[in-house]
Image (cartoon, rainbow over all chains, first blue to last red; front, side, top):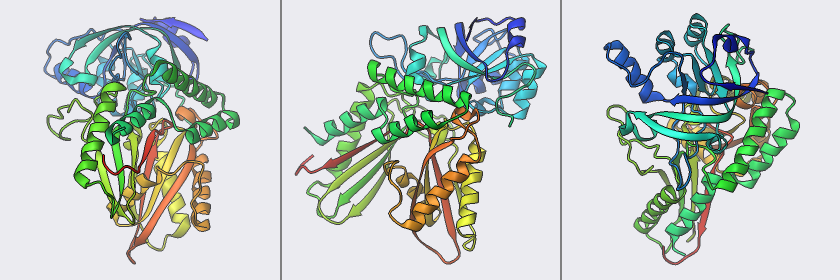
Length: 174
Length: 280
């Protein structure tokens, strides 16, 4: 199984095939429904974003609270389809990698191809497994959203499956 | 032990462990599945359960909304107020002690402010004969809840129509609800009653068939139909999409055949408390 480190180079992104299992390490952002709505709102209003989207990776997730002595609580993926109305806008603004679970809309697949981006699937419901792969946790913005805040995590050895490639090949096409 | 503490203990266990009948179905799937991609998902699920147990962590960050089914005897010595207070206290204790995520918002459309307690629960009260008190609680994740559907079928559509409709609902859900899934099917009653029955069906142990032979057979036929979708674990394609189908049915109107399908993710988490105490 290949070990990849963020940020992913264009060569690495183009070398990946659907169904390939990988381990991912490095820094990624965490954001889900409300963060997506707010980021697109800021883009619409041409206001500065609280993160740099250029080459970035966003993980669709909202963690459970960290027990004492732990970096984070359970932190598996949430359903990606709810982010579909917002994802093309973020991809067109520099976002390179998305991590979530489940199929994406045709508009998202087209935006992935247009931007030579990548969609990775995490193992749904496996929050305890992913908690064991998180080394650091930082709130970036929108702390008032509680479990839906925009976070930055440093992860190590995150097990994922390549779901939709830059070429538009998808594990969901059957 | 007080009723509230007993409820809390069961909920602390439920968020970190699936019931044994659910675990047995997951192990069966891992043995039976032939798709390599699905097998890798099932292996991750089983490893996740080991880590959740060892680290006392919720198995999934979506610790769900509490769906509470209270079957209260008509001559139960406990009053409804005491029962309700114990349930709320038990849920609240578990949320704090087991690090449940705060996943509930006050109001659905506008501010959506988080209640920061994971309360209130959704509650259904059912009067039953005798003096017993049974409290059953589903920890219902919303990745799967968003895939549930109600359809008002034609009363003449028969078994075929029911099987087709459930197949279509599961097909539309695809990989979104964290398959392999557990299905609760409600038939009859009214629109809302069918929805309730579909949730109630998820309470039945997943290794138990319906007691009526016709409905047990319908459960099997629906399961076979669902496996034909080949959605597989994680939606990555495979021979096993669902691990069980449970039906609950009730009388309905001559003009209708309400159908509701509740989809639960593989993390089919629940607690059951049978209380025999004289007080709470």
